[in-house]
Length: 367
Ligand SMILES: C[S@@+](CC[C@H](N)C(=O)[O-])C[C@H]1O[C@@H](n2cnc3c(N)ncnc32)[C@H](O)[C@@H]1O
Image 1 (tube, helix red, strand yellow):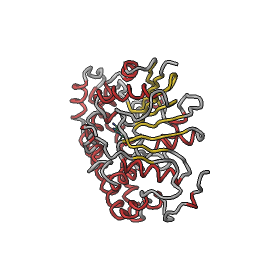
Image 2 (cartoon, rainbow, N blue to C red; image 1 turned 45 degrees about the horizontal axis):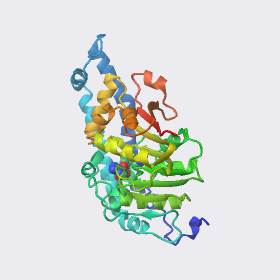
Image 3 (cartoon, rainbow, N blue to C red; image 1 turned 60 degrees about the vertical axis):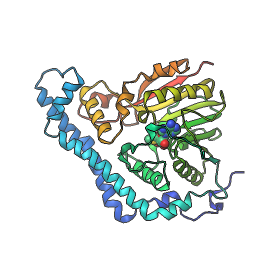
Image 4 (cartoon, rainbow, N blue to C red; image 1 turned 135 degrees about the vertical axis):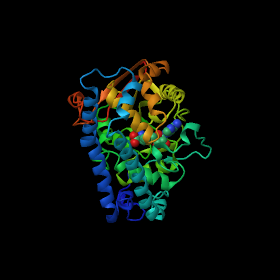
C-alpha cells in the first residue's frame, strides 16, 4: 500500500519549504530573471539589428570564424557576453547563500525515513568518469560531492528558464510528447534530481519508473521530492556508460540535457548500453539543444556554452546523433526540432526573436 505523505515520520518542512526563496532574496531573484528576460528580448534584438547594419545588405559571411569576427566587434557584443556570465555567477552566489543558511535542514531531509516511496541505492565503489570532475556551468564544487552542491543545483534550476521553472513545465511537455504506448518499465538516464523522472511518472503512473545518475545527493533529493509529491520512483546511483541493468529489460529510456556534458566516445558507449538494456522494440528518447544553421544564432549559442563553461556542448552539436544511435545498435534513429508551447517555426523564422533550439532524438531498437 502506498503510504500517505502525512504519515511520513519527517519534519513538517518539505524540500520546497526548505528551499523556498527567503523573502529578502526575492529582489535578487527578480533582478536575475529580469536580466535574463532583457537578454532574450531587447538585447538580443539590438545585437541582431547591429549585425544587420554591419552586413549593410551583403550576404552573411560563409565561415563560422568570419561571422564570429564580425559579431565580436558589434557595440553590444561585449555587454551580451558579460551579462550572460555575470548572471550565471550571480545565480550560483545567490543559491549558495540560501543553501548555506538551510544546510542542516537540507541534510536532515535527505536522510532516509519510514514512508519513503520507491527505493534508493547508492554505489560505494562508484568511479566518476574524468570528464565529470569539472565545475559544469560554473557551479563551484559540482553537484555530486555533497547535499549542498545538489541543493544549489536544484535552486539554480528554478531560475534557469524565464517561464515557469519550479514546476518543471518543459520536462512535462517533453514527457507528453513521447510517442510510446504504455511502457511498463521506464529508465531516466542522467536523471539529476528527477525533473524528467517526475514527468514520466506523472504521464505513466502505473509504469515502474527508475532514475539513474552519478550524483548520490541529487538522487536523495529526487527521492525526497518524489515522496513529497506522492510519486513512487526508484533511484539508483550508476554510470550510464555501464548500466547495472539486465539486458532487454526496459521499454523506454530517456536522456535529457546530459549528452552535451559528455565527450563523443562516452555518448557512443552510453547509447550502446541503452540499446543493450532496452527490450526488442524499445525506445530511447533524448532532449538536447542543437545548431540552427543560422550563423548569427549559432555564434551566440557557442558564446553561451563557452561563457558558462560547457566544454563539450560545441563538439556535441557537431555530432550526428542518429548515426551514433544506429551504430550503437538501434534500428532507427531520428532527430527533429522540438518546441516548447509558445515557440514554433514561426518564432524561428523571426531572426530578431530569441528562443532555445531544442532537438529530440528518437531511436528504436528492432522488434
Ligand atoms: C544538466 S543535468 C540534467 C538532469 C536531468 N536529466 C534534467 O533534465 O534536468 C545532467 C545530469 O547528468 C548526470 N550525468 C552526467 N554524466 C553521467 C553519467 N556518465 N552517468 C550518469 N549520470 C551522468 C549528472 O550527474 C547530472 O545530474
